[in-house]
Image (cartoon, rainbow, N blue to C red; front, side, top):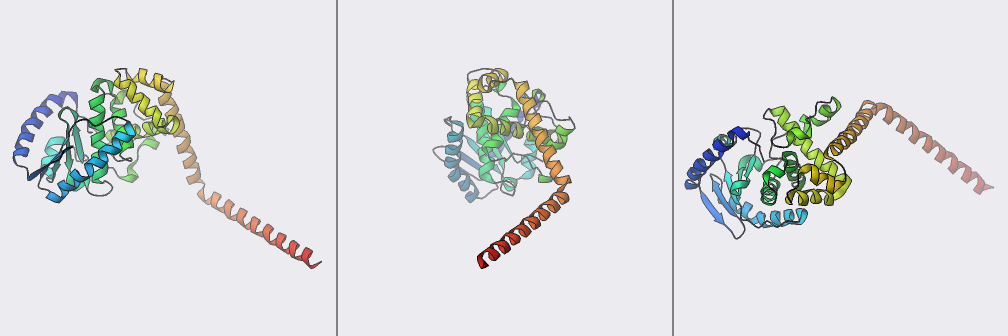
Length: 299
């Protein structure tokens, strides 16, 4: 879910209400199901039907992973006009957006349906945002955790257009230029490079929690946030460490992994030569053993 500067928030909602009234009046059509409503503008009926048909499965998958029921009926707006979508988000990296206060998901359908995205993953990502904000007060849910969990839930998919080769996290951590987690509690940076780094950090930290504490560790944190505890309290109670310790452990673990990967990359030819030599020696030993066995059988 793309984060707006708090100074722009009230203006955004005013614009959103006016704009949505206009576009809902101009919708190509509406599909109203028991669990979801899909409005579509400029896209085909089949695209909207695809969303409506996949929603129950996406909902069940989210409920099963998080353990909370999606007890609300979201409104999904499919847009086919890049120009109109950009008027709303003002960021050409964004392919979808969730507005928890309205139970609304807005999807730039042409972009969301192209690789590396899938409409199902994008929908699951945005629905996760709605569910988290439904159960946890916004001032208790840090932005990095909100985005990190949504990426985990959707299999690593964000709502951003990110080139695989443009990963910034490894370089940032090794150089000590990563963004401290406390700075990602309320909002993400607006500059492209910093915004991409914030998403990568969020994803990586949640993955670290999952790898070291299991899904249960993440769920415990969410449950404590739901009870109204701060993120510091929730992590201390759930993981038995402080947020600062968690961040330091994550950075240390990531730095070790990056250094090991860099070592392998820098010494690839030497390692391949060593393995080839080792295989040759083992093959030679095997031949000698076969010859010895053959001679023994002759005697």
